[in-house]
Length: 85
Image 1 (cartoon, one colour):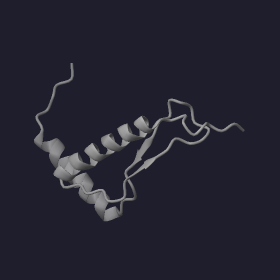
Image 2: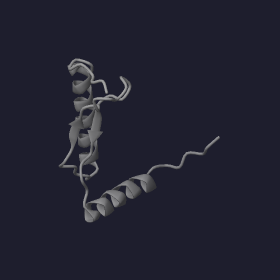
Image 3: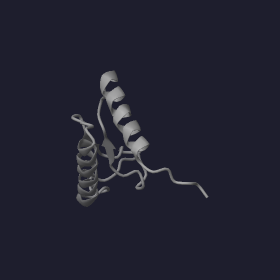
């Protein structure tokens, strides 16, 4: 089994994932969805170069999931319907 060199995934790739994850968490917070257990996960040692960093949104309790669902459904219901062509 081969391992990837330490610089296989660059710091810039991790920074990009951190910025994207932070922006997502901030956007969700504006909707009232609070994610307090997020983290950036490095690609696995045996992953392809296309695997990239992963944004883990953390563990969610059932009551939190219900509240997030309510927020998303309310948001979807308030948006104008778009006809599919």
